[in-house]
Length: 59
Image (tube, rainbow, N blue to C red; front, side, top):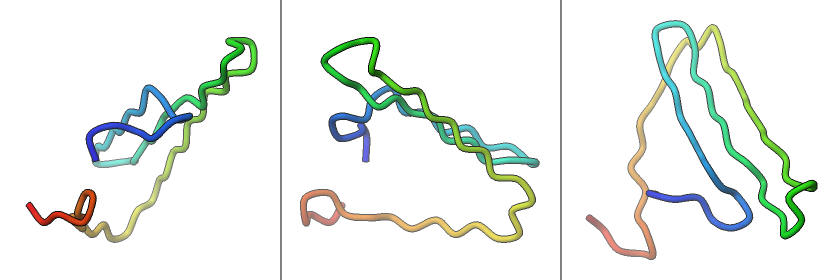
């Protein structure tokens, strides 16, 4: 997935040896109602990469 579906915006993923950090904004027509969300995961014991298909197509 190359972009986030509306109303999600400005998605970022950061990964290093210590943590996985996800950040995105929930957009709204009124800028005062926008919400920035950041999730940080630490102490990850196992990560698995899964490749999903986009719109039912295999790449």
